Amino acid sequence: MTADAGMWPSGTLGRLPDAKCVLAVVARPGDEACYLGAVLDAFRRGGSQVSVLAISRGDASPYNDSMERLTAVRPFEFDAAASALRASHCMLADYPEAELRRLPVARLAERVIRMVREWNVDLLLTVDGRLGDRIAACVACHAGRELAVPVLGWTLPHDVAKAVREATGLSVTGDADLRIDFELRVHRSTQQYAMRAHGSQARGDGTQFARLAVQGDREWLRWLVACDRARA
Image 1 (cartoon, rainbow, N blue to C red):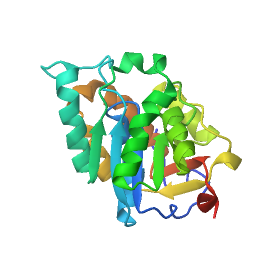
Image 2: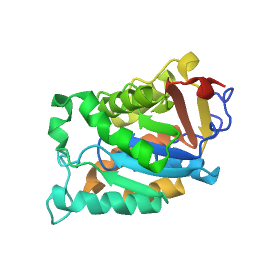
Image 3: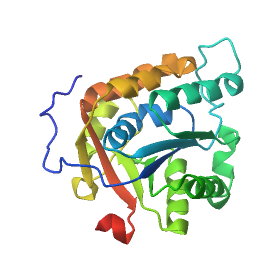
Image 4: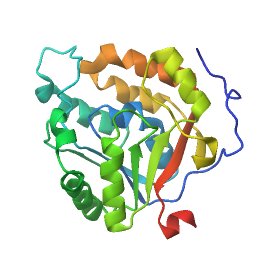
């Protein structure tokens, strides 16, 4: 299923919020490209500096199309994807992916807080969309509240999420239209290039490329933590 430009309602189509430095917080390498790549590219095109932080090594993936262990190859893939996205900084935390759910959110957020301070971040971007795995959103929100930094979450409208589930089998439920704050028209070429940098995950990327085909040239975001200046 391929979406055309007029498939989804465009009443909220508009510009991104102003930000000097955006930090994408994801659970594992690959998410920065397949979920947030087009949005990061839109921020960069708008003049923002972008950076990426993955809070695990991504070693629990069921896919490995390389000849190396995932713990050895995924950091290099993450660096390559960050370069494709033209990120000013990238950081891969050394937590095993399987342990994320057992670790306190406050402990995981410490790395985010440190990066926000070191890189002068004024906006956090993460993946929500009511995915089954929301650890990155919880960590980003904890850090955002701690530092009074707004947090934007990637999401989908309910009808788009339903189309994605039917086309790909991904566990995503999306958000009601009234909860969505931004609908964007995006370019996909940089995102797709960054996704292909994760060569060990090639077999799994087919599902994500199918999701992008459903979404077409649209992305949706909502405030997860909206500070006063974000509301303004």
